Length: 114
Image (cartoon, rainbow, N blue to C red; front, side):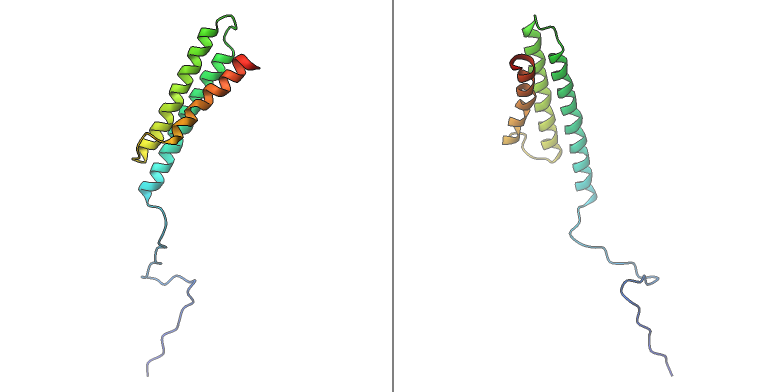
């Protein structure tokens, strides 16, 4: 007589039969792109913010220097957004580029309107 096969509960591991992988998750390449784009954008935007702070602490008698630093900060913010878009292999031209004006707007308020 053969004994009936014992049925194992689904939550237990069966030796020799690996658990099926759940479908619908992100691939490793997608996760790497998200991490790289996040790091690039955050790092470059922090650089733009530091340049805005440099403009705030520049001598008030030289407004041209402040304006130049704010323009450089805007350029770096633009580069950061374009870099993040290119990492995802998207067109660099998008409405998100308008966010590059944010450091200039904040810097203008801090330097001249406050």
